[in-house]
Image 1: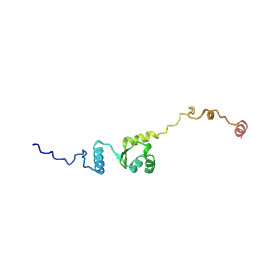
Image 2: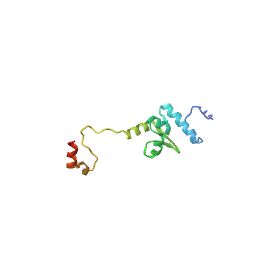
Image 3: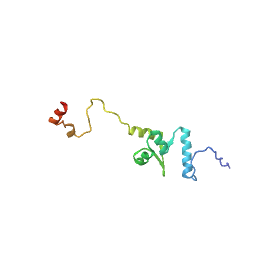
Image 4: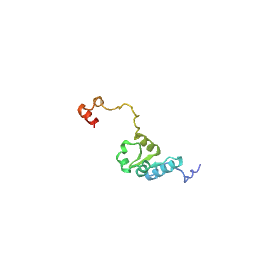
Amino acid sequence: MNPAPAERPDDDRPRSDQTLPDLLLGLHLLQRRVGMRMHTYAEAGTELNIPASWLEKRKDELPHTQFGAHVRFSDADLDEIREMHRVRPAAVGAPVTGLPGILLDLKPAGERYRAAGSC
């Protein structure tokens, strides 16, 4: 008969008797081991230089990981959020796009335009 293997103290594998806080701690330890960091709202807000409340209000629109009521943002999530909100300026002299055609056809009014130019 083989004796049951002794449980190693550094064993990160989940057990059926673990509670959610135990699982979160195990996940945190595993992430540290592989170099992946999970951020709380406050930490993610600091990393992105925005208020944590902005993240909380838009949680459903942003990439994140959720364990019940616990929301965390990985480094990859933060990179994706940065990319989602990156604004690139239009090239100088490039035609304006995205406006309805009627707005693109608008020209200044004759008399008012000439009067303003002659001042």
